[in-house]
Length: 226
Image (cartoon, rainbow, N blue to C red; front, side):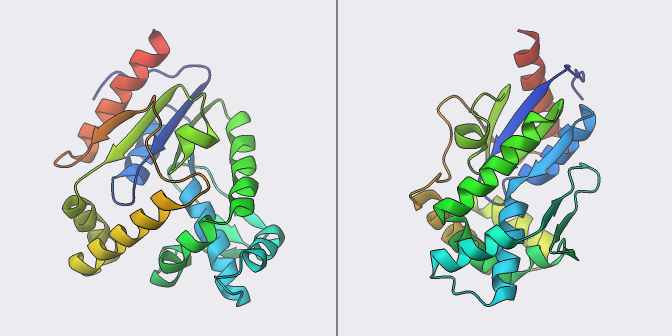
């Protein structure tokens, strides 16, 4: 493991597609630097859960926005136990289910919903001495001035294997779903999934969690000590 440096203030932006290992390594890194952790994807999932609960039409952006504006969202940023509530309901398990997974790209594509959540994310970042933020547009939109910007990726097969192991789902079906979400997320007009021009790409195919975390620590140490 690389030497752990805990600067007084530090923002780490971790972007990448589903199954690239963002959540696991981001939480581990946040713990090591004694920082907090923000899963922006879970925020969109929590809003999606509320939209589904309301019965709003996923093809109606105005209906989606109305629900999003009325949701009471509670965001836990402890990297060892991140926790989300929507309207007073624990949604940690529900937002990882297939129904939310199938609908989240439609909700995340609504520009006004993105603007609302980005503002919340930026407020959390501004109030944190050290934070690791993961998502799809962190380095390019949410935290363009982050100390370290990383774009994690992996082969389609590796990503599908990881996600299916987490969710106990069929690998082929998972790979097809990841490809569907990648296409939707990278082609949306507002804040699409993409690698920021000044982000470092790290291919995690064949790498263990400890290997990835060590590499991120090395990169962070290099940034904050330069």
